[in-house]
Amino acid sequence: MPVRFVIAEEGYALLTEVGGHWIEIAALPSGARALLAVSRPVDEGALERAIEVAEDWLMPHAARLRGETLEVSDPTGRLRAALKARQSIVPDVWSTLEIEALFLRLVDLATGRFPPQDGLEWPLFMADVLMLRELAHHGQVKGLQIL
Image (cartoon, rainbow, N blue to C red):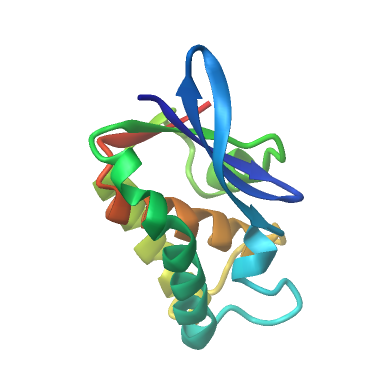
């Protein structure tokens, strides 16, 4: 059964398709801002807290994701813009290993091993990737498709 993750300014949503219609099965109000504060630096402690919030939100729904390709809809445009700023080619389909590798590179940036090189909405982008990583990891998805 197709599953979609929506990144919106007002929050995150997890949807499933039933009878040709998308039905919301979970919502996280404030989305990225519920994971990481935009007014504070992203450090290891903030990342650990964000992972706990993400896991608490997604675990009741993880079984629905198993074996699916998670569709990612981002009406904010934030995810694709930040990805394009970091690499010349942005694939539409990502494996779970590619998402994990991206997440680990961003953790290195966030924890000061390598400073961010741009003025993008860093904490929001980091939160989006963190949530995608947690969905891929705990949901055991085949991959992610950025719509």
